[in-house]
Length: 245
Image (cartoon, rainbow, N blue to C red; front, side, top):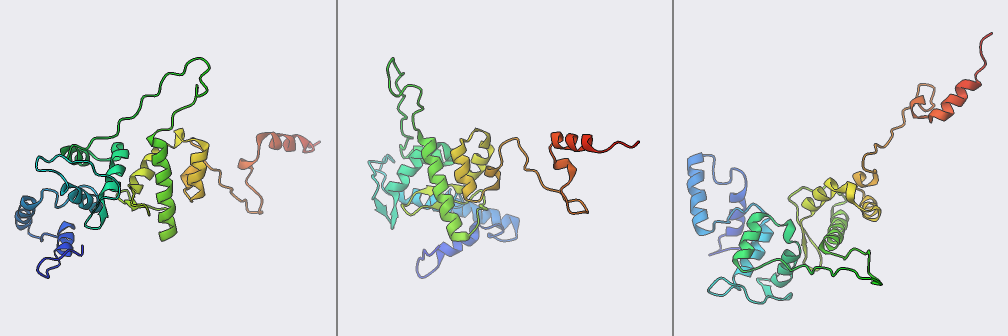
């Protein structure tokens, strides 16, 4: 947002234009202004984080005249941004990208990495029965690292869906999407993954899928409600009561 041209803060001006109602209250005038901005850059108001668009625009400057991107290794810096490391992250997190993001990267001839197909385990293979470590496990570790960093900075684990967390090594993690998807798949998470998330303060990770955490209800005399006592104990207590003669 600090970009300026002829001492005009165009970065801040564009950020304000992206906001709801930023192009004015008159609908007709707002549409005309939006068309003018789209003529300059169709992605002036992208459907993904602006930081992602900023890195993409910087990466695009390295493309040849035919639009094809050459070899860009981590450490390649454009306008102070490590677009090489950013590009490696996009390839690794390709399944997490939106269709529009994939289309723009594909326009630069960027493709996701080819996942090696594990060979079938033969007789006596020491690795038989073991699942190969894939990108999903690495993505989970990055998500946990991002949440740890976010909590240390904000003191909270409440993250908006559109939030993107940038790690110290420059890796960008769509933390909001990660948490939403992970919660929806909690039934298939391993105990160690649930424990890692619960340790950070995510209550839904501390409760086993399909089980509700009981809430103690106190009676007027201060004791626990009988509804939370084991049936066997209650049955014994009832049988021990003296019968009226």
